[in-house]
Image 1 (cartoon, helix red, strand yellow):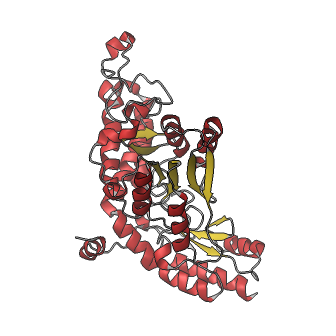
Image 2 (spheres, one colour):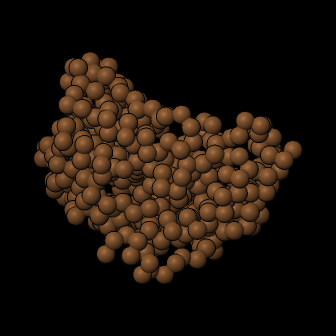
Amino acid sequence: MNREGALAGAAALACQRDAFSLPADAHYLNCAYISPLPKAVEAAGIAGIRRKRAPAGLHTPDFFEESDRVRELFARLVGAPDPERIAIIPAVSYAVATAARNLPVGRGQNIVLLHEQFPGNVHAWCRKADTAGAEIRTVTPPPGPRRAPAWNERLLEAIDRDTAVVTVPEVHWIDGTVFDLTAVSARAREMGAALVVDATQSVGARPFDLNAVRPDALIVAGYKWLLGPYSIGAACLGPRFDGGVPLEETWIGRVRSEDFRHLTDYESAYRPGAVRYDVGERSNFILVPMLAAALRLVLAWDPGRVEAYCRRLSEPLVREAAAMGFPVELDEGRAAHLFGLRMPEHCALPALEAELRRRKISVSLRGSAVRVSPHLYNDENDVGALIEALAAVTSS
């Protein structure tokens, strides 16, 4: 069954505001900044704090089983066949640094990334290029608001026989431009390049098909669309990383590390898959249960249904904003859950900021875009408040 058919057969989601603890008078349209904690995730964190309060109740399996549960849940979410391919990370930059350390880049080669890409997936590649004598090849969009198709074409054209790594998001963090990762992956494989995907701004809010994209590294922070806590996330690392060197030489990433009595035997062999790339002290008894609870919620709600809800909710906003002179990308070129309304020339940004504060509306101002990112806790009242705020500043 195709994606549209599957969604048609699933019950549409209703607003889930009761699952969160947002103030009644707040219009939080800003999940791309940081998600509010669902009540179930908050409860898991509190329970974790209480467990640490009395640590005699923590036993050896607790260092392993909860982390493995997160691997299993994340693997289900993205369609990874083997949970051992999932590493637990503290941040996107940590996993990007891991990728940069282990993917070969030679003198005269290039690393392809996007204009105004989030810096967590840029700085490590700049260092890698400087060290290797390689080129950073930044793909810029064409001018104008309707730029997604041409930007995608430029990205494919930038990948050539000298490309060592393509490192891009699925959804651009500033304005929600969607990149065709299936086409990018096919082009990268044709040219022999590795593909690193930062899907922090997409996984959890729209379906992700790992088997179709086939990235060498898929990296996702937990505190946005996964609805989890800060400082924990997950990365799916493919066969290119087998036999690689982690950033940290942890004890828990070794075989037989569950045998606490013999840890000073100093086992050198790593556990299978991507477990060697886990962050040190990955068995965080507060954050790991929180992320597990968040992943269960995301799976229960289903990213496809989340996407459909956000699309239905945002359609009136996009229509009204465009009529007021806020250019926005066409539907097929932008995400439903994250999109940028470009400021019209006659609209003063300070006036808009003041109007948003007055109405208790939270969005993000990124570059020249008003970034709007709704989720299941939003409803028509939130969208209506933002429409009224835009109308107030354009009519003044």
